[in-house]
Image (cartoon, rainbow, N blue to C red; front, side, top):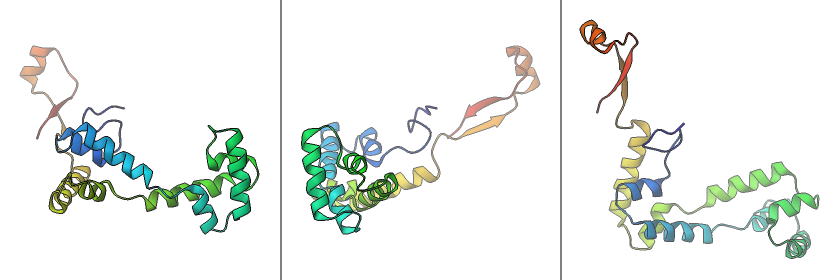
Length: 159
């Protein structure tokens, strides 16, 4: 379901929020996302740290991956029987948890100051809790209802 404000039901990513508010440009958003992706801890390193695979397993996976370059490391490891899908999901969770925040990257890139980043993050979080443009259900007064020939409740945007 598309809400018009925050995309599909759920939340808008902080970077898109900043872009839609014209705080950052599309180029700045892409550069910050690229920096965030570049600094992700590789799944192989996480698997080694977590004791799921050994260094020699990593070499075997990389060798196989070289033969099938479009296959991701985790998928190759699963295909070789060196980790389970559950292991991979846990590693992806750890990888996501270790990801640098977009606010930190934007400050490092001197796109935002620390104060600006903190203020925008607070506003973003507040909007997630209490989004503007609430919809309240109301019943149309009888006179207006007859005029519009509507008898069902209708939604009115307030805010």
